[in-house]
Amino acid sequence: MSVRAPLRRVAPGVSAKPKGKAMGEVRVRVRLGNAADGTAVRGRQRAKSRSRVVDALVDTGAVRTVLPAQVARVLGLRCLGRAVAEYADGRREAVDLVGPLLVEIDQRVTVEDALVLGDEVLIGQTVLEKLDLHVDCANQRLVPNPAHPDQPVTKVK
Image (cartoon, rainbow, N blue to C red):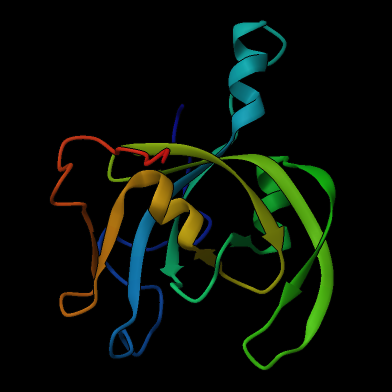
């Protein structure tokens, strides 16, 4: 998958927030892509796959991945239906669910669906679990599970 210009112009390893990172906030560079494009490319239906590298907030309080509408639109993700999102303040809202979304962090890749809302990309627990990544709050970064540093391992029992 090729990487095109980022949606936000941010140097690698630099937060998009002008005032720096908040205490305990973890931001990562993530490659997002339309996983359906890979199938289309193999079938020679599309010459290019749609992908972007973006700055994302790791949100351990979120279960799923969240995308702003603009990102979902640029990636050409298909609406799979609606899902109810519950916010930290208890409010609930029906939002679009899109996919299939390809998520790559530190050369670990998974396919996911995502909720469409807000104005920034949020990486939730499902991606962290599937990619076998841990949050290192002290150093504000993601690290591979020390038990499986070379590749993600998925628990099935």
